[in-house]
Image (cartoon, rainbow, N blue to C red; front, side, top):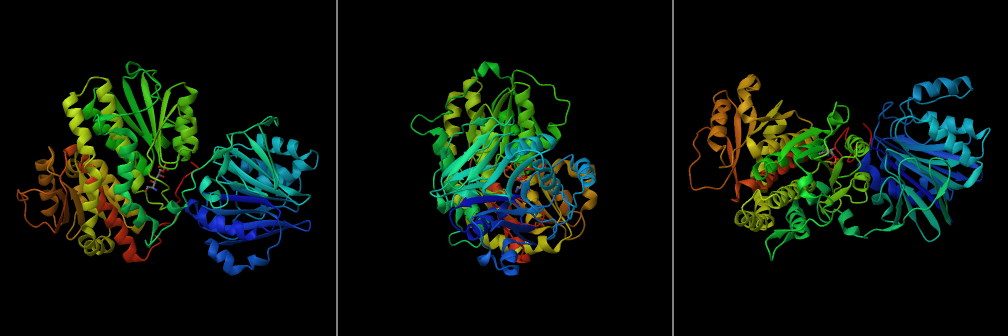
Length: 606
Ligand code: AGP
């Protein structure tokens, strides 16, 4: 949700902080700021807008100091402006924060009675003054420990001190925070992506921990202030993934990467020689599991819904799904024989992490399907199934969606086999079909021109519908989300059979409606629903799969035919035109495709 960086070095840090903040902008970009310590003074500069604006507004090259912190913001409390931008500073403390302080109002009242003056509307500013107040009567570590215990809510913090000019304090509860190690400097960052250009040696803080970072030393403490040792991870230095290459946008690159990422996912889990699936170290006896609950947010929730159809198709397991922000507050009935699966690209989504934490506290079986294996959700689940897509930088998820549903499909196949609920011949056929996917996705990616021409109609309309049945329904939801979050026009995914129960009233002359009608068992029914909207003036974009049979309807505005594969796997191919539709709509509007307004790549606050 916000991005944090801190550097303690033997040389000036402002340039490195600014370049790291640019890498962190995918986490939030409505304002930015930096603070350095130099000759006993805290020098703080910040402004509304992107990091580039900060560079244009201030002479950062001459911002001296070998210690500093930086921040890119996604506003939670207080509008995006330079006053509410981080860092926030008192006369002797400066803080950058990612998270939400839930008791900030009470703390603000208390601190005001102590004479502290507040300048911003943010919750973060109470942290600054609380530390300042606690430092009056405590040594540093004691003051930090006391402050953290007084804060309710979530935080990842970077803190510098005017009177202690050789260190940065980091602290974590509920929002991710990492430490990086350099030759004559050390780092603090929201995630490895921010630190990877400077080091591949990383340590992740766990909830309740804090650290003291000097240029040549890093100390870790638990919430009681006791010194602890932490593991140093060596991360793969795959810098190429963090580069757009010849593409105009990360999203364009990530759409085109899908044949490769799907191939990688298949390679990771499929034993081609024996036509079998390997899920190593599955920690439970298959007889211990009689139901599955899948939990996620946004696109990850659509992956859960997609998986529900496959699990029901392939196994006798009871399957339920839930949106994480609902699940975490529901009166859940936890069952020992249920496997809880948490789907998350970033592995840091606050609602999904909170749902996992709730299941862990109830000693449930938990499995994470994630892209970032060093993430909090991956680290705290009993079992992890990585999707192996490489970094996904575009805020709108594309390759990670295909990666998520691929791994969930593979898991459904494997569990069906282990439970003897699938004929082994069919099982092996389906595994063989899987291996055709990358090439068919490649072919489906070639539809560029048709889609570019169609996209303007969606831009000019006041709204659109995306309809599908069965396995196509989750794809309809995902397609609508892509269009909404990229071109800021209203789009609604809906079960095709549900239109007559109300939403048909929305249909008016010229309204664009996407109908996903592959020639599967739902085809005829979906075509009838399509005719219902055409009869009321809708401009239908029909997305189906190639067939020698004619389509049973006239007055279809446009048709896109994807390649053929068994019904189970058609959702992978149907997704591609919808990703491209959203991309070209936003491109035509000139919007920021990789960083759409109001959004962030990882929503680490609730
Ligand atoms: C999808 O395009 C969005 N970026 C958003 O819905 C995202 O899928 C959601 O916030 C969940 O993120 P996660 O997969 O990292 O948990």
